[in-house]
Amino acid sequence: MKLNYTKQGRFLSPEIQISNDPRDDRPLGDLGKKIFKRLKLENKWNFTILLVEGELMGKMHQAEETANRRLPKLIEEMMSKEQLPEDLELREQRMQEIRTQAEEQIIREMVQSLS
Image (cartoon, rainbow, N blue to C red; front, top):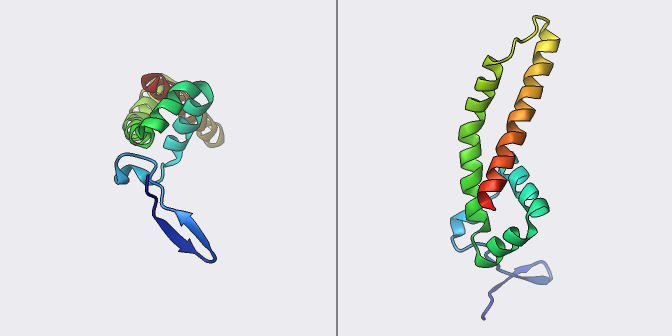
């Protein structure tokens, strides 16, 4: 295996590609990072397999895109089932709780779909 190196100051750093597709090496957003972390904690075996096969970041980006599409719909659905308080401060607090619950639910679903 031949590695290429780039000089950074006095040191040479290997040019390592962590996925099969260079486009998948872009950074994850907030929701993607949460899915990544949860998968790594809850399903180390599958995480490692995806990592070794070079499919991890591609799958993470797909999961993040799906989660970002689903999140607003789920929040709206959950809010329609709630009677939100009239007080502005309490209303904002409840809306944040709903968003957090929706995020948790979607993260759980995305990790299950990757397992």
